[in-house]
Length: 116
Length: 114
Image (cartoon, rainbow over all chains, first blue to last red):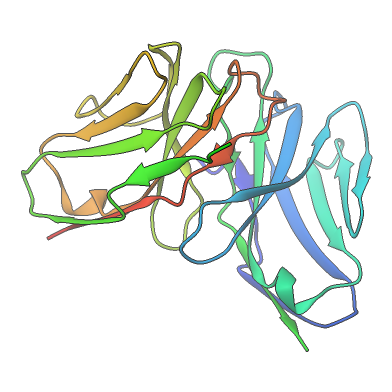
């Protein structure tokens, strides 16, 4: 049962343009969402997060949007840079409930390639 | 301040063997989580340790076990290895198991089971 889904395995964009990475979830208990970036041979690094009480969070070039009714979130990177090329994971967590509390549920990842 | 470290980097074992993976948490962190990342998949939660006690477990069989030591470093033990256990094993540390605190990941241990 895949509770967090990233349906696009890969995305290619031109440098300077916007990158939009999407993520869907099924569990209504999730109330905290995160994006991680992973380079080869390194562990995932935290990028940005959003609580379910918000619908947008912005940090520099990175913005995460949350649509609770659609159980959908997206990460926007503007402008995209070649150094952003990596695998991006969406993750979700629940602050309450018995089965998910204290752990992150990850999507399958989307490989972003930003072309110079 | 040192980050999360894991050892070994790579490991090759055969079916039926046992393996121990190690993780040193970031300074000041008392919570360690272990994840398994199969090829092409996202990390899957194995279990979490908080102050030397297991604090949550994912959908993994009992042959996956762990320990946390007084200095908050941790071990992941896997008995009776199976081919499907081949994966990247990641540990992550954070403060006080609170989900709103950032989890810092180590580089992982790549386990190959032949």
